[in-house]
Length: 425
Ligand code: RNT
Ligand code: ZN
Image 1 (cartoon, helix red, strand yellow):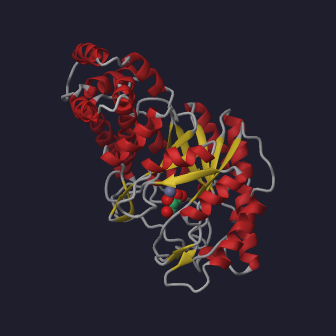
Image 2 (cartoon, rainbow, N blue to C red):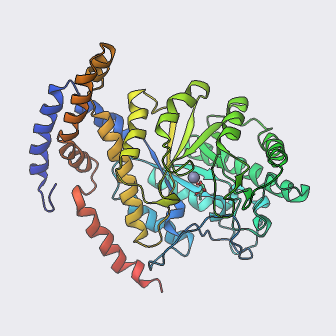
Image 3 (cartoon, rainbow, N blue to C red):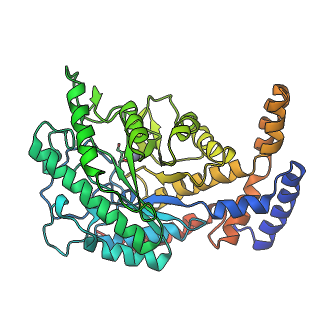
């Protein structure tokens, strides 16, 4: 909608849109209901450039790099919670918050990663409860002196491997606790940076070690009502350009063999390789998966997610095959060159818009055409429905969920920037 549109203008436009979709056999009310039931897990790390709030010796090992120096990033957990809460107030629906272990609150005490415990996340849990959010969790296998050599769970040194195994086990306990406290399973994800900058001669040894480490980590069975495990692959990273231990084939095999979730990050494949087409294959062999919806620009650059064809293709797969209950949608991007709350809002709203567009597809009609071999009509219809008034449905959804429609949310972000962010010197 144009800025300044009134509620009744939004409602009038919606009424016409609803009729248009009904002509195609699409029940807009049902689509909006399903949309409201689909949570997106907002990643905490967009709010502070993947920094965390530990008192550990500074280290930057691990190939995660946010670029940009836009002022106002969160410096404390309280600030991060405040910023995320602002973002949530501008995003329609009820969602989740995805925390990394390095966002522990240890009350000024030095607590190393292998000693983290549920008690270090009490404030996060209270906050999530107050907002009705579910939570997800991640081990932090980077930005730590013991990750400086670029290897963690696959390190050749047994002591270092042990340290990270202990960290991962601690994270599973924390995840289970979060899930139990919040009454919704917490997906605890494992992503490690392990790999080589230059061509190795032994590609097998590190993978054997990683497999053993994972077996040790997942040895204890946790209640799936509280806790789910995911493993995230990658093709290459900063400092691991030539070889990544935890490749797609590695983790696909591991997940199938051990019944963990597989995490597909949209930026972790060859630049022209999308993750949408992988979903219907991997879900033949796995019960559930996790997505890290991201946007690579030339490489795994973690740009803010936008309503691109890639994103739409992912959402279409989830909706067309009724996978919404088997796919955990998480976001993974970090842009430090723009207002960080706007980054969350733009990316999350884009994700939700892509789901809405997919839910508004006349799938019965399209499937019928395909089954009858009428590929001419399939193509024609796919093109024509692109111009249906989805924007009017989106605005109405925002109104219904009491968040700003159209670009009105930007005013809120600007105000917050002046009132809160600008005061963070
Ligand atoms: C890194 C992975 C990983 C991280 C976050 C911070 O390439 O995508 O998911 O981005 O855990
Ligand atoms: Zn990721």
